[in-house]
Figure 1 (cartoon, rainbow, N blue to C red):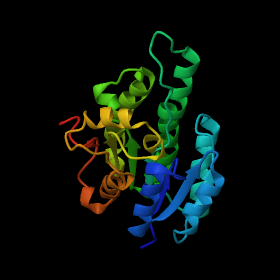
Figure 2 (figure 1 turned 180 degrees about the vertical axis):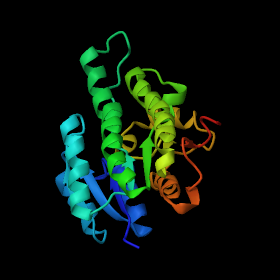
Figure 3 (figure 1 turned 30 degrees about the vertical axis):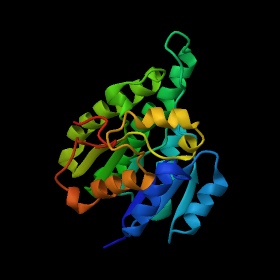
Length: 242
């Protein structure tokens, strides 16, 4: 069989990087998307056999379409799409700007729509495929100062359930992974008091790791999840005991 191909957005660091590495370890050829961190993306790709990097600003519909097109041309197929790239503008609703909300929706939600749509066209022709969208515990629980981010992530969950129904008859599955508080460069820079406040919300009393999120992505991309679609795996240390 031809080696399967996975496109991971926002894969130059953090959870996206961990997903690229984990999928490559399972034999996937990986397409590593980045927006501005080209050298970091090159470093990730250099360590993964057959990996290629692709630049795009996912806030623009035309660049989303072009990204999928370039991946298909480079690898000849697309089996897994991981919509991981995202952003947050943290602000109390009283002071939040409509332009900031538009930006968050463009990058988080509209890019998921645009990439899923473009990828589904490729996958329908193959009669197989898997779309994995990154939601968030905040999309289920809410969080002070993150109304815009929470709205985008909650919408991604509902969107995923709907496209799972749309695409099931074509042999295409769609699921979500919803991380909680994950150890990243950003959390490492928080003061000790802020880190303690976060841990107080987590029953397991520790932050998750990007690798733990990536393990769920790998499972959903595998044949072991062939009867799972329209679902969400929560990776949050017990914050949201679904």
